[in-house]
Image 1 (cartoon, helix red, strand yellow):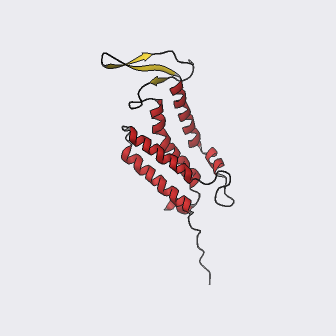
Image 2 (cartoon, rainbow, N blue to C red):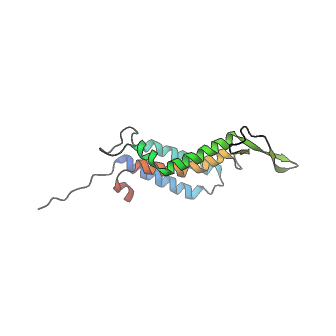
Length: 160
């Protein structure tokens, strides 16, 4: 008679990561219409919290599996998001437009950028829209995808 093989259980860290990613997705759909800063900042904090649920960067948890940092560096989405966030940082540093109020109306005034050939950004209040607001808006889904790619290493945690 053949003995039934049991599958190894899902590591507790992966179960917690699945819960944190689910909370992140639910929060993003509930509070993020891109209209409220508090919703975006809370989503950013939830996404940053998922980083603490990732396996050790040097070894990982499963024997023989690829190191998590190598899995992340091979992910094209990581590099696309890194490029996008880098562009927003360049925008926040290389300012070419200034948001001013004249005669009780908002006006964009041209300013000389620090480096002409780099993309230029705008000086605007954080509550309206500026490069830092865009960073806060785009980092949560990017981090959630990267954390899911690196942190979910067993098929059972994905199929839950």
